[in-house]
Image (cartoon, rainbow, N blue to C red; front, side):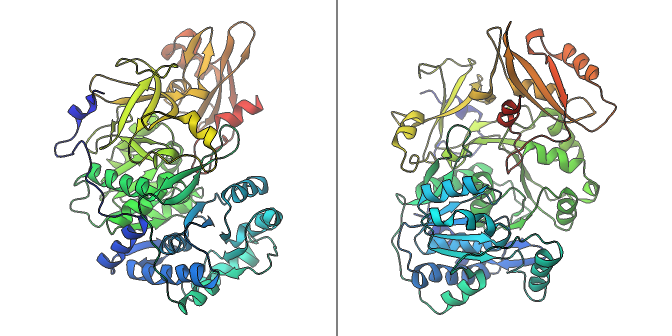
Length: 554
């Protein structure tokens, strides 16, 4: 195929990345341990682990997994943790023992947790004690044999460790009572592992690194098999694409507010930053925006990753004006489209452009990213090195430049398939290694790609395709609007009509204000026929607005 986008590449960026120097994620992290022992690796609640600390602790945990409880190559270990120091220790320990990581959203219900644990066949879980009562409900129906529980403060050092856990358990009462037979504490697991020696396990490109479960937007949640090849290649692609963006502010200091169990933060912050000896500033609860703003105001940072709703809310948080953005070099918005009004306000407030990036769990995730030196223009960018992208019609054939169709991706970062689901794998993969994304977009003459919307979110009004993103972008341009979501609802005359849900910043904003604004900026069939004001909108764990939930309510 004609790779039009190559003519728009930054100078010095190759069309293909060289073969990565590491054959596994384990090799990648162990290289960082040996090369950057004195660098700060992770910081949380005032405590920092160096790469030497992480090396030491993760080796103890690896020995616990392999030698104490006897897990063998390829077995699955579930991680049900927010952004606390125990997460990188656990993850690195899993890989050093030759095992597979299964990331679990700590906010899962018992039903969701049961499905993921049963489907993955995980035999061990590391879980924050705040959520252990949920595990208690379902553990008998899973293959979990070993449970490691941990408190938020466990790795914060004495006396902060004990004080933090005491307050959460007994003052704020955030740890519901639970009983899990034979569970061990995280510190107990480390002590047990300290007495053992790790046996070498052969793992390489073909081995599975993660069972990374999709959000389950259709049917049950599926585990994308992400191999060590997928992950180390995507780190290599990302590193080559960034070029010398951090020159003068190295090593990288990243604000890591998106959860590490989500693929965006897992690759972009955890692995890519670690590969370069950088530091992740962990934000355990990014929904506490005042605490979030206060925490990052105490750091000089060069990388900030987020989603549209996070950028918007943070700018409207007291204390935002105290944050020092002078070292910020790269700011990436992913997960969902960044709205132009939010990007404009962010650039004005911080001096830094939000660069859109695009990918999926199934692409490890980075596939299309804006040039580091670009300004915000609505594009999701260019395919990164070693990545091919095409726009296809319903028949699967490639469409000409400028036409709207489904985005399909091919590259070394594309998953191996869905865990134990060959039929579902066949639905999204077609010959030649192409992945059907389910997203609707187009490519322009210069090779830049644009997202129109999710295929399943598209609204059909009197035969016309209406894309919710376009309507939402128009509405949030109004000064009194904080957030907006558009869906289609059934209509006898036109098939569907547009309904919007709006969260106001200014309570004086009226329905008529929105109608008037849409009349000026949208053609007739795109204008909302119904408007509903809400105090908040339903969101995923990373802050993506759940249009599906709104449709289910309507």
